[in-house]
Image (cartoon, rainbow, N blue to C red; front, side):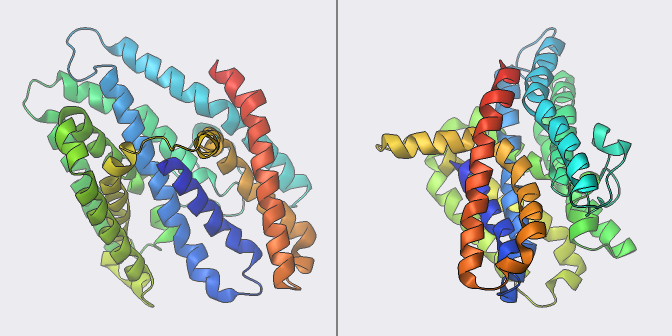
Length: 345
């Protein structure tokens, strides 16, 4: 359920690209909306990955456990890498021969395009989050493995707390020292944002080792998470917020923390009595990765060929938005069925 909500929020945010020519007041939504949609995905990914790692008993079972790590990497990369490299090739061709824009270099093949420096915003811009998640998939099992082997009580808990606090302090330091822009230079740089999925890991830890408290407190936690996210939204709405050093460091802790507190509620969500609604949510969840890979490229192509016509009226903006959604969902369904699913099998 949370994946669907995050995906719809992201589509709504990026869909404002068709409306900005007639409604420039939507610009703040386009700028800050992506922060909330993407961070929800980060937190959910951390939650699901950690639950998988805990299910493999990497923490609690003694003995050889490297096979569990290998199995985890195999499943994750089989799910994500084929589609990523397919769309890296597609983007290269479309950007060079259709959009006539610069294309990326070799770093995209090793997810280094935004490892320690800002991403090139003119080529495959949505890949910044994919790179962050791939590095998380690589490092998370190693971190859990090491914590499981340390003969010290609360090693995992201290590692999670140190990561969350340490990353906030790191962002605070580098923003203050180098006066980095909040979006390209902080939000989209892997080495400054690897803590985002760890908020999901923290929630997964509570769910695994304190399941009763996790589910009993789901409404209170969700309420607190909504309050935290609301404060973050109001802060983003302040005119000079992005000029604040504290904002550029703390907002990237507040937003994922807010989503992490909503996880107990979403984790306890039961299937709807409506078979149609349940089926729709299941399909959208399965297609989410394909949707993410397709929707931005579809926007760029539609703006290139129909940008002038779109700006003529609100009716045109609405029509092209619906057309974009239809294309995105149709192609995502086909990509999942004929490419992603066979690779996963």
